[in-house]
Image (cartoon, rainbow, N blue to C red):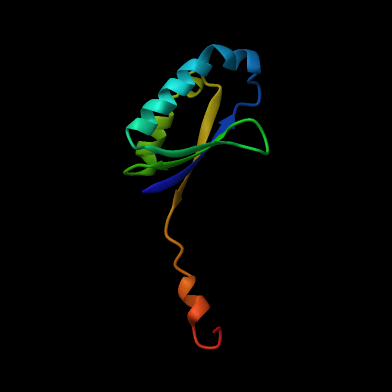
Length: 99
């Protein structure tokens, strides 16, 4: 299952609170990448944070892996996990009258 995972910073979290966890964040992200769970990871351009494209058996399996990030374990971030599926409306482009 393909998933879009967006971090959710806790409103009271500060950069000073993040600092001790950043090395561990990178290490855990790398481990998830090597294991095939993280397929792509990007810095968000609208605010500080990340967007991850992930592969997992289920939303729950993805949440379990994401919960192991040090910032999540410290209660500084949460995750919005959005399951994705194939875009099936391509055929509408070729339906009679749309050609």
